[in-house]
Length: 226
Image (cartoon, rainbow, N blue to C red):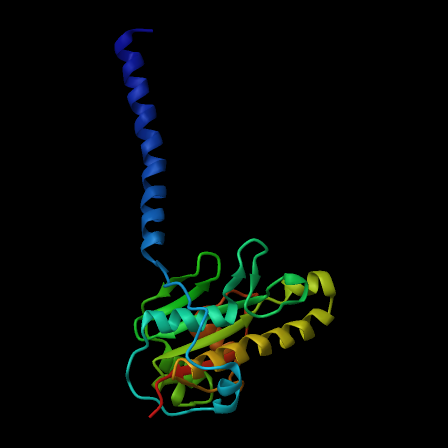
């Protein structure tokens, strides 16, 4: 084989390899742009647990003030944050440590998925979906008014694969643990929240473009109270 031919073949092969590598690098860069690292959560607050329990009330009226990234970080950590790096345990107890819950965050600049591993959020959409979510929840207007809404979903198969139908009950218990953490954390931060269970499941799935195995269980608006 002539040297010039060999060189041409090598060049073509390298160009072909680059054709496959470049899209992977671009996709990776785009994915990194959509993932935001959250500030480290604080492990000591200005209020005792007892006082937070005593002061917790459902709040349905909010001012327009946005929440800081630090406040959002603390709220998400209280729901499903990792509290034991070695064992991977999270803020709320879970049957068999199987963790069927997925946490979605809605705010003015888009829809996000909470990633407990690394304490990050991943942007899924740049649309403000709070108003459509309120419509899916029987037009409960405070969902659209609150600066953020947290939607807790369940992937039942993670638990039922081990515990059968009993896993559905275990998941219901777990979402209660997680939500109570969030409500109490909101009080400590000087914020208000309200638990919402009245909504059209299929409509919520459509608004959030949820995967088929994600079942919405809970909507929690959070904000500064009027």
